[in-house]
Amino acid sequence: MKAARNIGLSLLTTVLAVGCSDGDVPRLVPVQGKVLKEGKAITAGSIYLHPDANAEYTEDNPSSILQIDGGFTMKTYPFGEGVAPGGYTVTLAPELAQRVSKPNYGSPEKSPWKISVPPEGLTELVLEIE
Image (cartoon, rainbow, N blue to C red):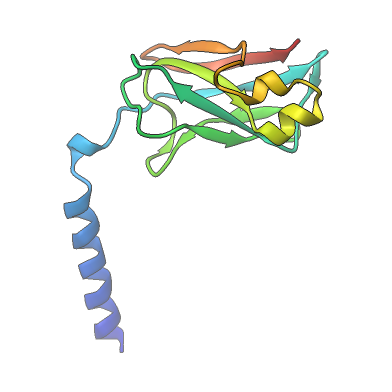
């Protein structure tokens, strides 16, 4: 049984290694910050980044769940924490945008939040809902 498990793990590792070459993995930099409205933390929802055409990686919309203090750490699926440098439109989850009475913040076409992620990332981004 143990030998079969080891063979299975070995095969899985080989498949993952072959399926993910370094050329497929985007360069990710940290993007962290807080979402506030009238100086108070916005929680119980998610935030998304929608890449512009100039972003280094456009195959995913990085996202994060908002923490109790309104904080977030963006992640790019399936690669982990961080986002590729470039321009983004930032949105709240549509349900959260409705809850804070700002539906435009839930739409990539209407959101007023535009950011540019530099090669070193952003670690103190504050997004204020107006």
